[in-house]
Image (tube, rainbow, N blue to C red; front, top):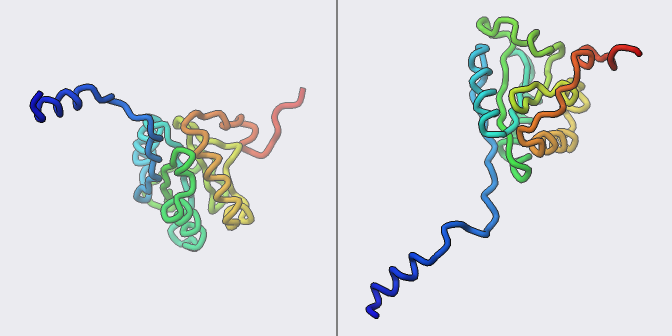
Length: 170
């Protein structure tokens, strides 16, 4: 058998799949949201790729310190990539075109970090306390937990949890 024919026979008998581990999904950082339709687009993208979207709600005048901690954990340190990755976006609540987006998602503190999974806001896991937002270890743990959810939803909570109540009494 000629060497060129032997090579083609060998190439045709190789498997078309790999037994190696799949590559990790990289975290994605998106541009700041200033209009409701921009958030809707990112929620659809996040939902279709089964990757949770981490949103950081603040005002343009608010300190950059918290933003840079969250963003650096996700972008620079890759928090959540081993668990499947996350998307990250900042929502500028005082943009003139934002309308009532903060009211729609129950944002009543600045800053607030809210995760979306399958386009559902995860109210029961949102972060509003400065002690949680400024604690690097707690924040990393929270990001990894949300990434493990992998777009499966499940922590939306109820409307009663939105206002800090445990629910109707029985």
